[in-house]
Length: 121
Image 1 (spheres, rainbow, N blue to C red):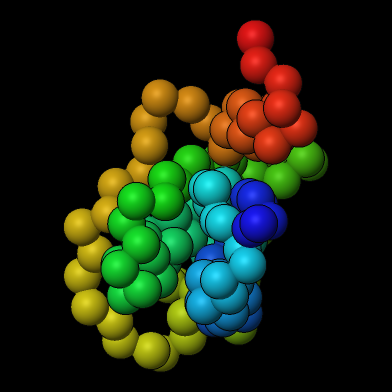
Image 2: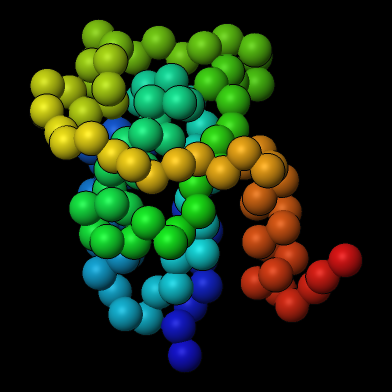
């Protein structure tokens, strides 16, 4: 029996590595990725998540984007450390994986959390 999980992250190199690790484990059933700003703007981090999923041939896993701002309503600025892409100077291929637009990251966390616990509405 596989373990159902959702990853809430801001994919830069560190989170990309974590996603790759979990995708390689046959005991893990990755249901979705929810993305927030952190190492880069949320849109950039969502794109990075798509790159990872596409590289692993797992574009079936949905990506839900959340805000780029933190709870203080500020955008996290980390370009000086992680670069504009969150991947430093690493040059990557293009991704065709799309962010789901039917709900935001927090809504997806609630929906999938209820699904995992066996609840539905």
